[in-house]
Structure formats: structure tokens, C-alpha cells
Image 1 (cartoon, rainbow, N blue to C red):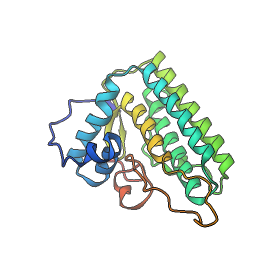
Image 2 (cartoon, rainbow, N blue to C red):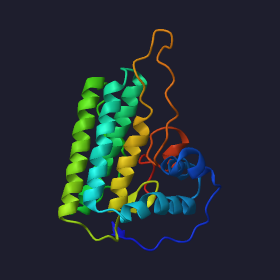
Image 3 (spheres, one colour):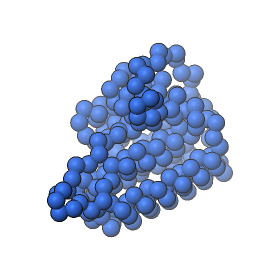
Image 4 (cartoon, rainbow, N blue to C red):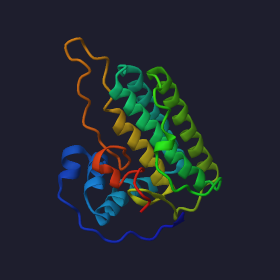
Length: 223
């Protein structure tokens, strides 16, 4: 963990980000395709600036509201390998992020690891994953409640494997947004004519376990 310095100036990349897929999704796309200075700019614009304007109580409430939508999407999801993988991914990333929040609370040192050990066991069923998703979000909410009661310094940062140092409030916003974006890939039970159907393209909120995006995700070496 470290104290956050003022972010360096960075040029705004091509305007495809906000106009086409929204601020958060644009950040996710560029975070895995552009260089470090652009990642820093996006982290500052999409995560840090909005988070800094929020209290921990407000971030907690946003996390709880997003959790309701998250649970509803999980409940509607069909029992397919793609849906089970998406839920396992969301749970793993959120558990991984929880360890960074615990470090900010002073419970332990910030670990230098990837998200894979935090994923549910291989072979977890859809009902099991729904329960784990609910339990995981409840633990995140509780950690943010503790941060409200015992807030760290605003300048305290914990490093994200792909996005670099993030303030604690930005971590909460990241976890909220990551689960929200990824859960939009969940699909209902496939029809007899459609097979399993194709999943929606994954929007990687700088935390992934697939393809070239590993270079900036929690599975990559710590930057």
C-alpha cells in the first residue's frame, strides 16, 4: 500500500470510449488494450474521480443496490457452462478485491497474488454459485460498512494488478462496476432451437482470466 500522488497528465484517447459503450465499459476496453499512461488516465477519470465525491456510506448503498440487480440476473440465468463460468469469475474477482479492502482496514498486508485462488471450486453447480455470489456480495458490503466506521486516509492506495495503485474508494467502485458489467453476460435458459447460445462479449473491467487481457488482469504479474 502507498500514498497516492497526483496523477500525471495524459492525453485523452480516441473518443470511442464514452460515446459508444459508456464510461465504465470504455474504461474496461481501453484498460486492456492501451498503454499504462492511458490506463492511469482512465482509472483517474472513471474510478477515482467519481469515488472521491462519494462517502463510504454512499458507496455501500450503491454496492447494495447493484447487488439486488446482480442477484436477479443470477436467478434468471440458465444452467449453462458459460453462465457458471461468468458467475465463478465474478465471485473470484470480488473475493480477490476483498483482500485489498481488508488490507486497507489494517487487518493484513495487501497480498501479491492473482484472482484464481479465490474462484469457487471447479464443478460448482449453478445453485451453489448463486449462494456464493450472495454471500460474497454481503461480505463486500460489510467491509465497506467497516470502512465507513474506520475510514483510511483518502490518499491510501492498494495496487491493482492491471490498473496500478487505486484508492480504497476506487476499489469499491471497481468491484461494484466489475460485477455489474460481467453479470450482463448472463443468459436465460437456452431454447431447444438455440442450443446454449452465444454469450455476450465479455466486458473486462481490468480483471480477467481470458486471452490477451491477462496482461492487465489479476492473473498477471504484479506491475
